[in-house]
Length: 117
Image: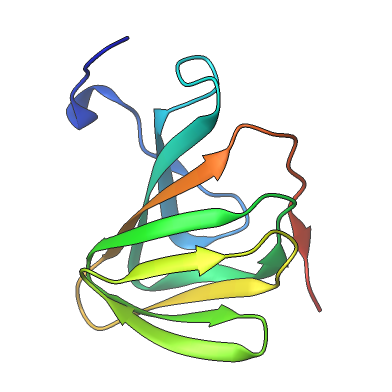
């Protein structure tokens, strides 16, 4: 795979999320070192507090959200960049009346998602 259009890839519900879908743009079958995913959270949707074994690098494409990273809560919007270290508790809550959408890059390494609380 060299180039594909996002319209060719399926958006699937995130089981642990609320009104949240993910689209794997580049997965381990294509990119040997990193995966690139697109998340879409509908207004009021999000992800509860959890940890991952891998770090996350994110870029906000549209919308607004409240993102908790460790003990800090941030309001993020289009154009913001978010870094979540491996093992750090984090959560998302989409704000406003438009979907919150972001790209998320993670290493292609074993990852376990653990709920917090």
